Image 1 (cartoon, helix red, strand yellow):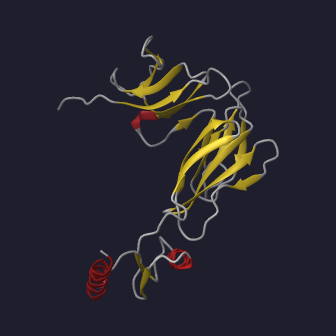
Image 2 (tube, rainbow, N blue to C red; image 1 turned 135 degrees about the vertical axis):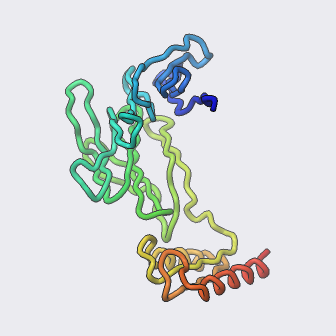
Image 3 (cartoon, rainbow, N blue to C red; image 1 turned 90 degrees about the vertical axis):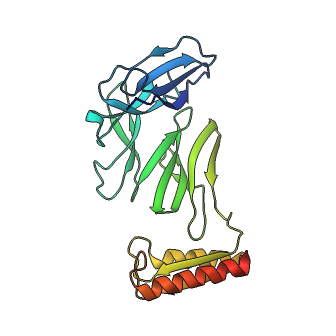
Length: 246
């Protein structure tokens, strides 16, 4: 089989004149850099372990790398990173001082989380997973530690991919209150992966906004349908739903 080349993970320098990215042009994925006009292309790292991510420091001319030793899933992060080192229940957000070597906890997360620094490194947007299919973004002041919820919502919604435009403006993707089409929700009462209360919150939110919604609850099922009669009922209800609303 022939090797397939790729380039990914572009990150612009603070002055917008250069871009760092990952490519396997040399065999192992490493960081390369070029001017934004395509000139002065050069390889920056020569790691035997694959580089999985690169991000430019917003306040100086250094790069943060995400390296997978041995090509495995154990990764080493530099500058801002997420870690469960002091919290087995979550991925806290940390800041690494490259001058002093000190690590500073900037946000605790009860579950999966990550952070993105503002250009002047005085604030951070923290992404937190509440449950599968349900996330939030918070604005954290790094000096005081105060947090502001940016994505209040009822029920389940996704908010992700934050991007700082400047020190005062951050944009992100979200589907909060975006569902307007007729919706059918099927759920198992004994679901331990996605608690039934989350399905009920979705239904309640849609009802409050006047969106047609049907709720089918299987009292004897968990995450998925194990019983044949419930599979049949599920298929019948879905077909009826489409016949009514398509």
